Length: 348
DNA sequence: GTCTCCTAGAGTTGAGATGA
DNA sequence: TCATCTCAACTCTAGGAGAC
Image 1: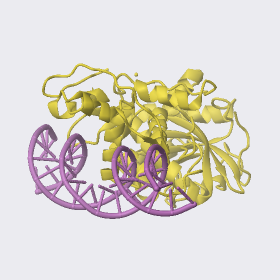
Image 2: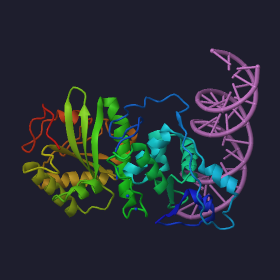
Image 3: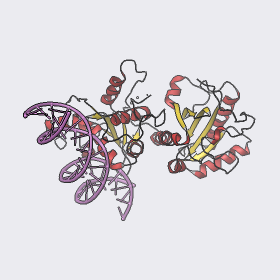
Image 4: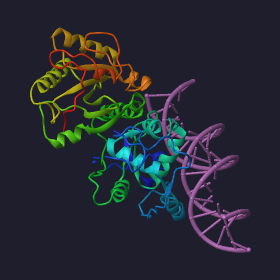
């Protein structure tokens, strides 16, 4: 379990002082929208537009080692927010926890230096909270109450999102970060294959919606140019599933596909992303052995990172030929699916 | 309207600290 | 040794404010 720092606790990381301290979300003001691909942010010309947002200083007790002058604290609290800052806050709000590398990938073209520097500013301004698990591991960022208020103010009273701030690290953080990694790679790569994420429901949003016989790690829909739309259920393995629980889950999906569907979706493809290729192979073979052939596709987290989630990385249940995410729409499915010439338009 | 000054953001580099 | 972090220093660029 990591420890949390707030903007007030400048240098607390160095001093090893913890401030342990929980969270839902939807779209960005004008920037990189995770639910709509890259619409609106075509590598914006620098510098980013600045918003005149004055952060009111607050006082927080610190140890003598951490204490800095009021002018220093006030300076840290005063940050001119750019559109990108709001995109960052929104991304963190939507996904609960993001690592430095993930935010760098999403908002800084992979530049860790740049993301470190900006994230530090947002941390100092009290908009983000950081969790340091280990010095050899990426920091993990979550939304701070001040950041949540800023997003609420930015949306106005009509905003449908409720920006809740995590008070502690997720009990299954690695799993959540892996899901977020897939989501980021989808958001970044799907536009290049003529698609965009129309909407995304994380598991906690699905749980809040009601319990089904199986709850995917995420349910999302991609709108394809000239192809209509397709809904996907995402399963991300974190080396935790036993073979039996995995099979049980797939049986749940099969039953859902053959009956009334899942969360109102009667036609969807199942995507399984595993950390371990051997794990994937084992479970693929297991599904073949029990003659279970749902509309399911496999890939590894490494392949997602290397080629993008939209790339030709998706392996069928009983074959070795990889397909791109877009190709899956046309794939002829077995008895559970319809011949995939026509993408689904059923939905929520 | 134009110019100058100041402030602030973006990005890079390097040093030092820390734990695996 | 490696990976990651913070921090300082630096250059470049852009926006705002004030003077003319």
